[in-house]
Image (cartoon, rainbow, N blue to C red; front, top):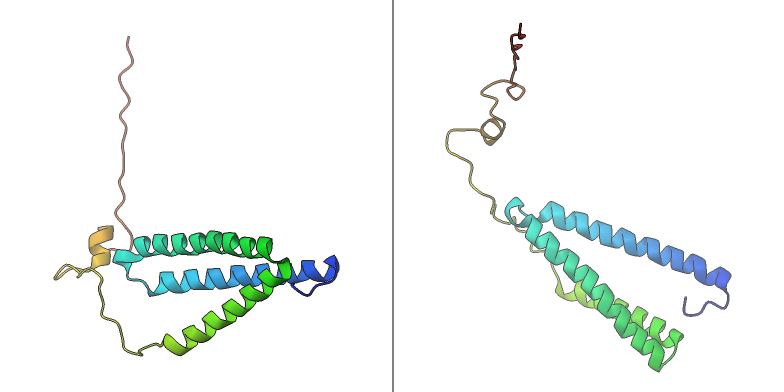
Length: 141
């Protein structure tokens, strides 16, 4: 987009960049949800959302200031270079240990299945149901 000379080139570039951004954010969100243990998932997802949205706002303010002081091309080239630098640093310093993480979920009650205890099925394949019978009141004479 920094080198686009016409609107017909810039708009498709912005569309592709927006689609890529949404794809990355959704992929990271799904990865976070799938990897977090149940007991802490909601808190971590709230922190994740706050970090993503907060960093988007701070990045917009930062690169907006760079564009104000310099030019739009300077801001876009600088953001691209900074992004590439951060990706290279992440590849260099962030490594997967390959070890299985310990299970931090709550222990199950001894001697009972959690599903049976939660649904109250007592050996049936479906939850219990209630039957209501309503007696009619006698009509006044």
